[in-house]
Length: 172
Image (cartoon, one colour):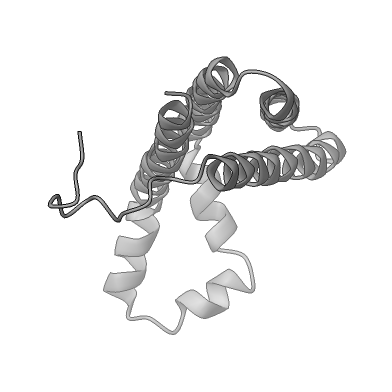
């Protein structure tokens, strides 16, 4: 119990209305961003006949729609149950994207990548480098792309995990 001699007596606690409205705005922004990016990606992937792209685009749309619905429900109903489901949705999103990145890594064909670098305008840019460095770049390209996908997956888990943690804490 706090009394006048306690240093925390004059401090204000969190403002529930402000926290809840911030939560609602952030979750709606997150949901709509996923929905819009998934829709754009779906159009591009369908045009390019990339079935893996279509699948991950549909996953983005699904995760975005779920985020929007749960955000609206949390404003009207229980923040606790909705925020927990939203945290699980973020983990599902990170998993969906990681599976896509793993597929992209497994589908890398070194010969095709190297052949694409040997066409203009990329080849013209490579000619600016010494021959030994050019050969190292060509040989290391598949590994560099693999590392790139691993870094992107790690960043995805950091951001989705951070968002999931935020949602989970808001539901306490």
